[in-house]
Amino acid sequence: MPSERLSVVVTRRLPEAVETRIKELFDVRLRDDDTPMTRAELSEAVKTADILVPTVTDTIDAALLAGAGPRLKLIANYGVGVDHIDVATARQRGILVSNTPGVLTDDTADMTMALLLAVTRRIPEGLSVMQSGEWGGWAPTALLGGRVGGRRLGILGMGRIGQAVAQRARAFGMQIHYHNRRRLRPEVEDGLEATYWESLDQMVARMDVLSVNCPHTPSTFHLLNARRLKLMKPSAVLVNTSRGEVIDENAMTRMLKAGDIAGAGLDVYEHGMEVSPDLQGLPNVVLLPHMGSATQEGRLEMGEKVIINIKTFADGHRPPDQVVPGML
Image (cartoon, rainbow, N blue to C red; front, side):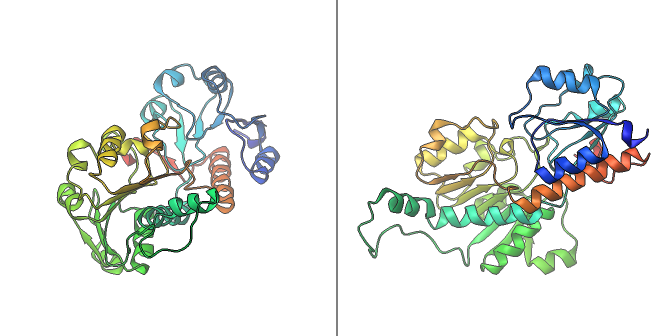
């Protein structure tokens, strides 16, 4: 299938440089405004396009794919996570799925540390005092947080991002612990000075900070459920820059309100853009609007990955970042 005849639909506005390059290479339909496509617009896109370039805000489920036209052969996701795409159904219909792994590792790990420090050192509270003009001057007991050095950090999910978080946390003097589907190779584990916990329950009960860095899959949905959250120490802090669905948000909110968990730093939420007002009003919680990947460099590199995946497919080869159900 010659690349010049490929019809590509992009569901969201992308960085200008990425859009320019896609237009140079393909017959592309870009989004006029930076809002998510409606269900009807997505339905029309999958009926008419050869390639769809969605983002995390698009739900590409079995019902939508049932209406896909015979031309649709590749879903080149702009992002790493693909839990919004029914990869198994796509595969059954002969549609390949690709993503953009690796490019956001450092950005997300940086944001994890930013949230960890923001919560433990009460940075938003200090910022609020200064912006309100209510600061009465320095005081020995004002806005006391906690030192991160020496604390136990438990990392849930020790892939690229989890390992990058471990490297950063070590530089802050934290003790690294982790739970993962598979134990790391000894040389990797030794390099990170990381302690492996086969039992997630036992790790959760002993950590000072718990960082969620695993993807959302059927097996990780509510992995941190109410029972498991209750194992956390009352002095512990929870950080999530991965996927909101991994945590039972209602249970976490109740525990934060009751003081059963000391604090939380969240960049993702169980119900997407719907954030509970109960969560928003808590002083011991730092909330960010899904900013983990929000760097100019990262977004450009994501675009480059998408283009490489499309171009490789157009040349008759397997996209380098193809996702298959067995990987999830």
